[in-house]
Length: 136
Image (cartoon, one colour):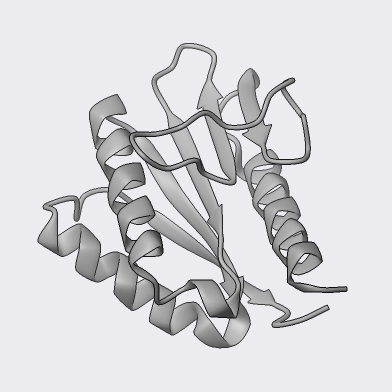
């Protein structure tokens, strides 16, 4: 399996994370290639997340992004994270969830914390799904 299948497996992990941790019975989950609520995630500012979940009353959101090793330290990734944090801040309650290879969890955590600090979004929680394989 190539990187595309690895990326898909990370998105599957994001979906499973939301299904396990979801806050409300009626939470709509949109995940690229999974069609759970009928559509793929919509664009958030200039970025399309791998997963977007929102409560029926639109008061809590989960934005998920899957990143393989070659995709973490890119300007595109930094911009995505900024856009997603901005959106969560606008909604008022939510979490950013990232799926990355296990050995890069610390790096990804540092990147997110730096962006949160520089953009004044330190109050927005984030979670990094750990223990994912680096390759399939």
